[in-house]
Image (cartoon, rainbow, N blue to C red):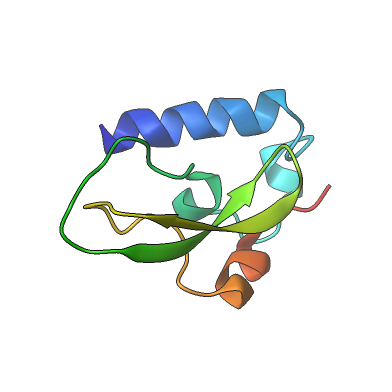
Length: 84
């Protein structure tokens, strides 16, 4: 499932212009391309930062999830974010 999310996020980032080419991105890694999880439910509450390829910005997402997706701080997300 994690591989599928990574692959889907990569394709969407390329299609919607997060980067014209992956080689043009600064500090791209798997976390840069993760989308916020949907329909996960755990007994913990998380706040994580995710890079939104559509807006070109990092956004804070709150969810009750089992995964450790995203970045813990805005600074971590912005350091990784793919600039146009």
